[in-house]
Amino acid sequence: MAAPSSWYGNYYRARRVPSLPRRCVVPDGIELSVDYARVDDQSTCRAFIRDSAEQGRGNVGEDEYEGTFASRRLEFVLGAGQIFAARDVRSQQVKAFVVVSPSLYARAVDCCLTSLYVFLERQFQADAVVYQHLMRLAVEFSQALCLGYTNALIQVSSSEPELLRLLRQDGFLRVGTIERCVKVAGMGLRDSVLLARCLTTASRPRRSATEINELLDKIFPENESLELYRTSVLPTADFLPTEYTFSCGVKVVCRNMRREDNEDSAVYEIWKAAAEKGQGYGVDEAPTLTFFRMAVLLDHYCVVFEEVGTGKIVGLTLIAASHYTRTSETRSGDSNLFVVDEFRDRKIGSEGSVIELALMKQLGFTRSVNDALASNLQMAAIYQQPLDDSGERSWRPVGVVPHGCFVKGYGWDDQLIMMYNLDNCLEFTQLAERSLKRESGHEPGVLSKL
Image (cartoon, rainbow, N blue to C red; front, side, top):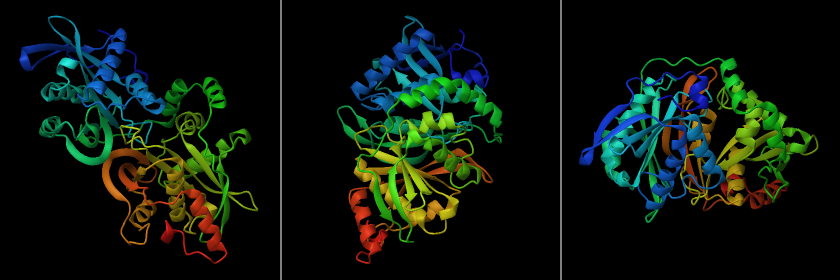
């Protein structure tokens, strides 16, 4: 059977998995034949996912793939991934799907991480052994495709203890636990355990910038993408603009990015400059302006810090729903902070991280589930900093994504996942008012009053 369309696998010329169809016997003596899925199997796959979500079984969250942001995630998984169908040998009915996809957790277009998925028909949704058998094939297929994957990642709900045990037996290691980040039907919010498995110890050379950009041109054709971007409504904070004074004396207006002034190009250049200098961002995290517009700006709040009097951009933050969580119910956010070179070394970065949290709080998020690169020592220092009067470190490490990003001057880097609860955080308008009072000498520093 011919492999179905996968824009990622097709462009990078994925090798055909050998010896297909593959037979495997699951409990109750049922024999499955696993081969590339047919084009018309996609509707069946989506039906399995919806049914698992409704039943609260099969490691699919109740709203994991619902809503605009989550549905785009599913479209990526099924569009970029290689999909395999497992059919009952006797009836020829599809009983499960195995998907090998470039990982959504990686901060790189040239991705060496794969996320593996198993979607089951109702008969098998509660059977961890069937899931284990098919996940073994997923691991084998991810290696056989020769797409440069070095590590595999999966998230498993804590409501599936037997599945966790079996996967740990097969060599998956727990690299993180994100609390209350998957909603299971009939059970409510549960923790999600991040598991990783090494696929190869061989070195992983990067693809060239030309290869990466040619792939992006196929995914986001410039003219069509520009038209969609210009006609789409960007997320904006209705409580902005607001003035804020940093502790170093720099006074700014915090405002929404102005697309009508083509400010998105200036914002992208700030991102690009940070990546080119290896300052906390990967070289191919957002390789082109078109990709940045489509993959970042369409679903991020972009808040610019503009210096009063000069109109210079001091820095900016990009805020969106966290891609580490599997439900919208916890309202988890993440962010990307930038400070331009002219304003560095004034502790604006550490104070900017406080502003981000206050913005998140006012935007309706209840916690930040964010990451920082292991090589980013400045961000590591910020995460160590107490953000309230207790003196205790407020950020909590909850996991790590191995080799998720390629950093200039460093190489393949790990992503450290951190969590911060916003329960006791001030909203941004309150924080800004305090900063202006501090400017007049009536209030203490912002960090002690978060």
